[in-house]
Length: 268
Image (cartoon, rainbow, N blue to C red; front, top):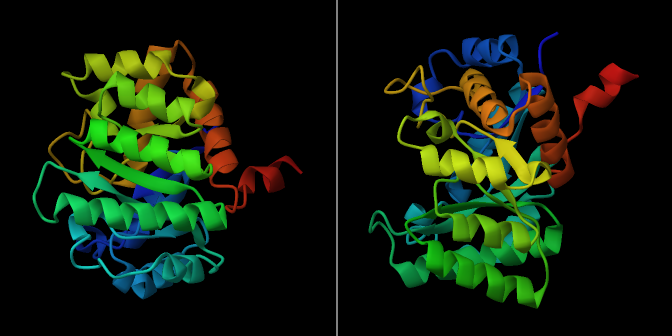
């Protein structure tokens, strides 16, 4: 039986996929990746993202501004995010957060834009997809401050940070998602974190077209490869692929609660 796997974070609207998007979606299904969330990086490009989700029944989307684009979309109010999120195929806010690896946006602007996304997530109840890179301390500080104002659902996506941020995220009620980085040879510390966190808070993703997992490292990533990350997560947890696929999919539908679970129809 083919496992049911969810790619909780990919970028299917990117030009990398334009020439063969139908084939990519088909290959994902063949690998057991039955549902995908294509993630917004610019609010201004949401119409194209929605058009893509309208074309494929098993693809959903988010609405948000990537931290590297925060200076370009620094004036988008939380109300606009909330308004767009009423579309039936928009199931999350983000990705938003902090990225100190590059200097594409001032850090204070990133923080301001991030907090607006938190406000939208709190108001809508939709999960906030968080991008955090080389910003562990500031990210934890903001999450603690904002959670103190009122809880909101969130996901630390493509997790590759330190144990402290992972544990803080879990403590504050969040979830953690692992990408192909989990499969890299140098990722022993990350695999140790994945082994120790509560299974009921873990998801898997590709972040495609980036970060292709072993054995496809160095090539363009695509949703079908979520299976490789799930297999490594299964190994570090001492579980079968089916058990891991079921657990991470259950976690996805718990967090992304607006997304219909097609497994319910299959069970019926």
